[in-house]
Image (cartoon, rainbow, N blue to C red; front, top):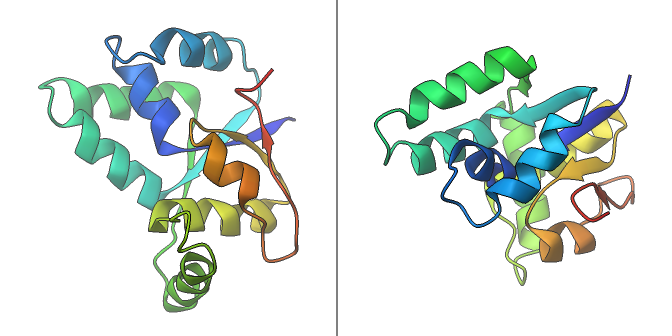
Length: 139
């Protein structure tokens, strides 16, 4: 089964029809038949952005359930330490906590395909094992 990581941007754009990337993201995600995976840090970011709209949080919960979204915890002490090492390494980008957790999850799941709108960041980021990402939104 194909597995993609999913970042904050595509989730927000998918849920908000007014987002300038909505159509691109919807086409990509609606045609995907594999498993989507993300981290609790990404979900926290998405919830922050969509909470500006009354139905936003519910829409996120409904999407997560309908898509069978796998959400991995990322706030254990060792995970926090590993994330901060990456954030320091890429501070010039900068890399935020959610991005760092996705980079770490990539190695954990041994999957490097990611749905993201952060082309600059995820084109440069490398996992602790030195793996690069394939940006699935770039056809």
